[in-house]
Image 1 (cartoon, rainbow, N blue to C red):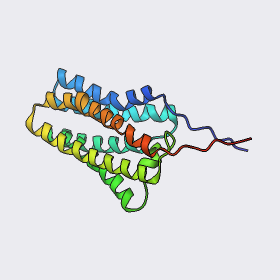
Image 2 (image 1 turned 60 degrees about the horizontal axis):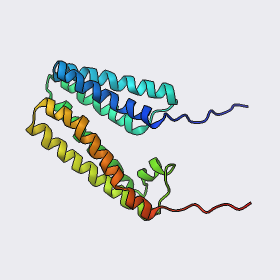
Image 3 (image 1 turned 60 degrees about the vertical axis):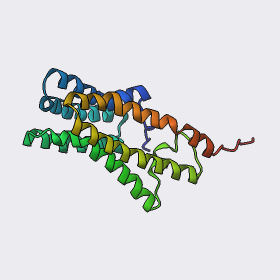
Image 4 (image 1 turned 180 degrees about the vertical axis):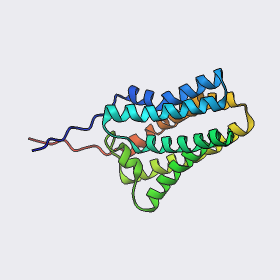
Length: 193
């Protein structure tokens, strides 16, 4: 009889390091070289991060996989066409893909935010719906913000914004959802023996 191994999860700090590591490498290499060298390093680091994550967890989460695919496509276009516009469009495209996935889920009666976070907290259906719409709005706002930054500032500023602006904004937005989560949290009933 075959036994199934329980799903392994990395500690949150290790998962964050794998997800943000490629961006840190991109930022460092951009400071030392140029955007084309940094893009190549970024692509390699994203692939390495997916590989390490799979080796440690024996699974690949959809969000990092989507991100890696977009990085490889837009990074490849950047290097092949020697046009840095493509790598700068990458965050905009990723944000819009995530907004579209969440919106498509709402339209088809599937709540992907609930699927991702139901293990962490339990909300009423209205809570999940409101949280989903908030994240859709956030992703669209971040796409617009990326467009403003890359079109109006230097490569170094844009890269710094991705690391020191977009990530803190995302964390702050997530924390700002705490009142909504607490308001719509469904308490589990205690079980009696």
